[in-house]
Length: 287
Image (tube, rainbow, N blue to C red; front, side, top):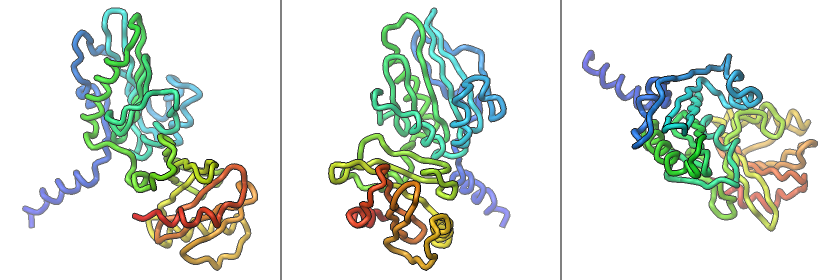
């Protein structure tokens, strides 16, 4: 029996990997870039003092289950690149923070980490439980090549298989608006019981809507979420799996399909009732 313990421990470590990176591990994982030197200073911030570095932006990071931020710097003469590596509780949280700061004005790089976005002076990516923000300062006209080299090397060390959360990869591609996927940890459309939520925006019938998926973990978990929602809307609790309509006085009618431990729904900020037209699409979602 004693011979089984090391095997069990090894399997547990692989299965339970959370991609947590200590400040020293992150520093050790920085790639060598010709002409650039990693500064000896390392700054570390936690949930209690993050506001000292990013002030008003701290609450959103905390909402996405931020744990620790490590600040590192590359130098090249008077030019320097700052890396702020935010460690979150899970890879989903790191992706969620990245998605919340995503901008259509940036260039996207799917080959870096789970995804990266950037311009000549900044680059942002997620990999494992890390969301990294990089910025270049100095006389260089275009920091992008160096930023990409650093980001690619670091992201691969953190998690060589980084990508979007698996649930989002299963969303239908037809009508999907590129780079609109997100992960929301709490208070989706203003309701504290709708969490966490995976979302993506779609174009359907010449209008835009947001599709969301909640994983209740078990059918009972999904039912509890629905019960809270139907209790809020004061609707009868006699619902069953299949097509449902939540009559939300603040957000309009919300069509939801209950499939096992998943809730698949759609939200349109106009408040229009589009339920009958959207149920066939929502029923395409399978896992």
